[in-house]
Image (cartoon, rainbow, N blue to C red; front, side, top):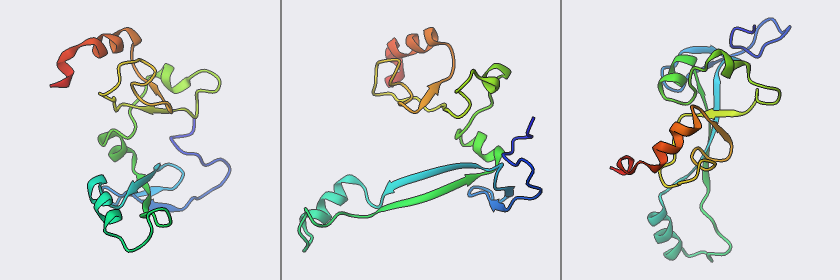
Length: 139
């Protein structure tokens, strides 16, 4: 249908570089993720706030904001996205723009929270619930 691109009646789109392998990828085909991170970890942040000359209520440490762009092969390899079946690609009305994930959260025990609120868990729900009840995943 669209060869994995979001370009309709446009002709040419700019190229971007993959952050993993530096491959040139069309901007509309690249897999884009926006990452917000703390500059330092929690314990170091607490030490900095305690020893800071500024008032703790007035000053907060800045975050790092990075827009990551992957080529298709690196996005699949790094498990940012995954290959979907024909049914998964088609989706029902409204499912087209929902984000899919393969990363499972190990500290939750309900089916709704296993992959977070912004993602649809892939796979069979009964198998996923059996996986949740299994105690060997904590090892």
